[in-house]
Image (tube, rainbow, N blue to C red; front, side, top):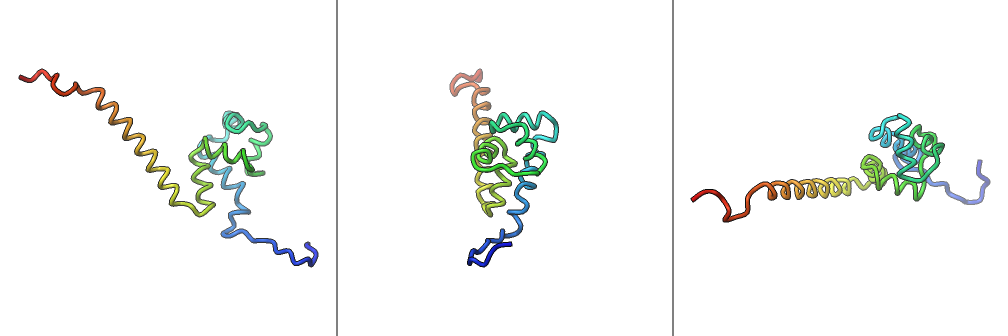
Length: 124
């Protein structure tokens, strides 16, 4: 209970604040699973302790600050989850388009490496 000091406690819109740890845990588990290897991967990505990684995977607590940035850097699922919670779904599309463009550029490079250069064909 808060004393009557005029302090306004903000409510989270759409319940995202209350569901933050659950959302991040769901994203991590969807990408890494629930094995001990998942815990070790989270530890490697963030430099956090094993206990912290287990909390994040079990939704006991959510990562803060630098750890959240490192998770989003290494996990597309966490990045998409974070963008959704921030009501920035349009950025998710931009990220996916960038990845698709990079994949197409790699495919074009492979195709170009397979075909003979112009003027060196066997046809008369």
